[in-house]
Amino acid sequence: MSLNKEQVKEIAQLAKLSINDSEIEQSTIELNNILSLMAELSEIETDHVEPMAHPLKMSQRLREDVVTETDLSEEFQEIAPKTGKHHFLVPTVIE
Image: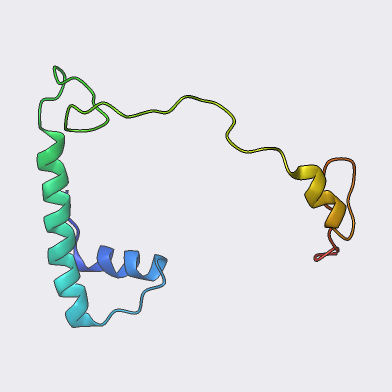
């Protein structure tokens, strides 16, 4: 797939970009290079490649899932100007 100058003009208009004729020519070349690279990447055979989250085999150092801080919500509600049962009340901003 490749783009022509008219398509690049339309894309620029849809993206609300102001672009002059010399930039359209350069952008057409650059976008076509990107599209050809994407086409090249889509041809790569990856059916037998195991999915991975990270390219390096590293283990994460995870800590125990324990509470390390006390619940201060009641103290915060005591000093708030207005509160509900378990929430803060704020002035209406949008009517």
